[in-house]
Image (cartoon, rainbow over all chains, first blue to last red; front, side, top):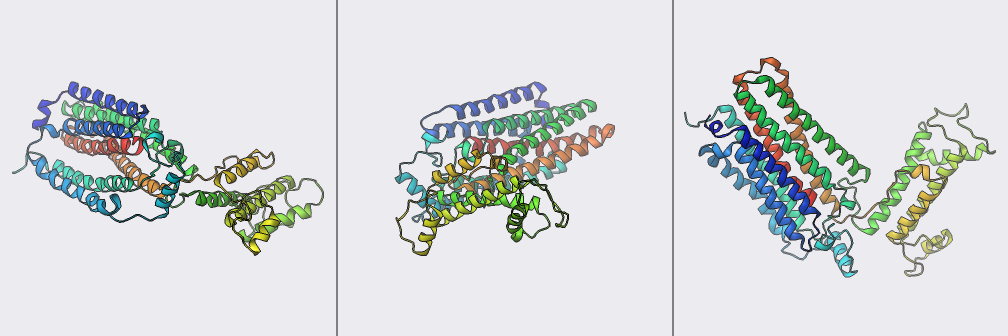
Length: 126
Length: 334
């Protein structure tokens, strides 16, 4: 198989070290109490994507596979996005005014000036 | 011949294609429903999500992924003994992962972070605490009077206390139905007090009246409810009532593990997503471990022609790692 010629134990070990380092990075990001939680979200998702690429390209040898990988994986990715996208307008964005017991409770907590743990506001996430 | 890869590897990749769709359905709908739910629980003290355990499990899976790669490499250089060794290491790490995961699950169960069981508002939490307290009594009674129908156990407890008369400790009269856990009169009296406290709490919660409202006032309110006549009950009220029960010398042995319910806004949706994603992931881990067991069971029969099998099992295992790489930040950090 063509892929094996390109890889050595050394490469694998370096990828492994990178994965460990990236994991530490995401835990450190979690421990930072940044005012804007969105920065942490951006960091940890970028780290996860980097780790996923490391695993796919090197451990799963995708970097060294030929064109079939695109033909095989492209349709699954399109279909994988279909469900989340179909949920987005209704569940994710609420194109109508939301009136559930949770939304009423959340409104009440906001009105009370609650800054307790039930809120996912950046300041009190941790 | 079209593709430059073995059929079995193509098969594994096609399967992994379906797996990508399978997990992205869960992960995607989790992200969407979470974004559409302002107030989603993130406090680890509330959700009992432990970033260290999650991080440790991430590390465990990464090491195991690396070991699979090494095992495959050893297969290619015909060092089958070493290959088997690394497969065994991977198997062990998979078991470690499941062990840590079950510690986490046990913590969730202990705090009743279970889909459909989580109170989401303070009022629901008050009801949940009251019914949890009743369940403590029920459990004790079931242990002491296993032969008595559940509905009659409280009466039975009253009879036993009344018939004991003197303060001498009794276990079971000889004519009584099959005995369960032995209980002294003192213990029965404590249980009876707890039962009364639980009923009182339940009544106060049902009518929304503070614990300071007396039973007589409660009856008065019941017959002609006048809003604002008595102070309203709050969650803090309920929690301090439970605290006082836990401090009681007689009752504290009964309430050692008792946690008053905490309202978790969107807690049920959270728990459903959590168990769906981590549960299916854990199932994949288990299936991977079975594959490793099969490879190890081949023993010295493992030969060069099995290199592609090890590669395929490895691909599957890396995919399991890949899913966790996304689950870790999404569940434990964000």
